[in-house]
Image 1 (cartoon, one colour):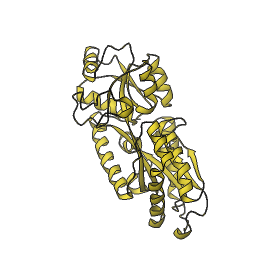
Image 2: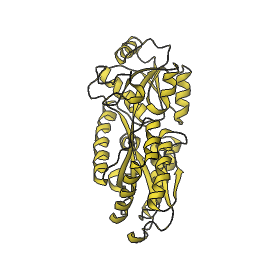
Image 3: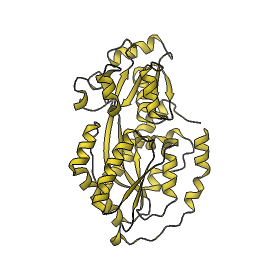
Image 4: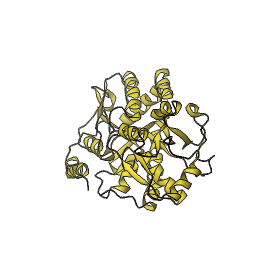
Length: 324
C-alpha cells in the first residue's frame, strides 16, 4: 500500500465518529457551502467544477467555496466530507475514478453506495487516443500492431490508477490482446509533458487539454472514445468507427452529499444545479473545454454510479488491476 493510501486509510475511522448536526431544510442554505473537489488544480474537473460553483452560488443565494482535496483517487476528499455533518453544507464532486477505486484499492475507506447520497450529474467529457509523432501508427489498429511487435516495450501515461486514461488503456490492451507499460503520474499535467517529450508513446487523455497539442501537430489523434465524433475534433473517428465496438469511455462528474442529508436539501441543490447548467455562461465554459453540461435527477445519477461501478469493476478484474 502506498504512503498516501496508508495515511488515508489510517484516518478512516474518524469519519464514523462524526456527529450529525440537525438542519432546517427550509432555511437552507443559511451559510456558505463547501464544495470539495478531489482533484489537483488546473485539471479539467477543477475547471469545470469552478465554473459550476460560481453559478451555483447565484442560484443558491450563498457563497460556494471550492476546496481542492486531491489524493488517493478521491479518498482524501471523500473522508473530508464524511467527517462533516449530514446537513448539505459540504458537498463533493464525484467522478468516474472514484467508482473504480473501490475495485483496485483493496481497503478503500469509503463506499459510494452507503456513504454518499447522489445529488445530480453536471458534466461529462471523453478521452482521445493520442500518440507521439514518432510513433508509426495512424489508427488504433496500427497501434495495436506495434504493441504486438514490441510486447511490453511501449508505454502509456495517465494521471494515476483508476483514472479514465488508465482504464481506457487497460481496456484497449484487453480488446487487442496486447501488452504495454502503464506509467501513472501524481499530476495529470506532468503525464502530458512526458508524452509530448516522447518518454511515453501513447495515451487516452481527457479531450480538453489535448486539442491544442493535436492542432499544433505535437500529438497525433487516432480516435475518440465518445459514441459520436466530437465537435472539437471533427476529423477524428470514434473508437467504434475504428473497429472497436462499444469502446466508450467518459469521465462523468456530479455532486454528492453525505448520506443522511435531508431529502429537502438534496432537492433544493438539485434544482439549483439544473438551473445552473442552463445558464449561458456555464454552457459556454463547458463547450470551450469540449465537455457536456449534463443534468438530471438524483435517482438518475445514482443509477449511473451503480452502472459505471459495475462496468469498470469487470474491466479492472479482467485486467487484474490492484494497487498495493
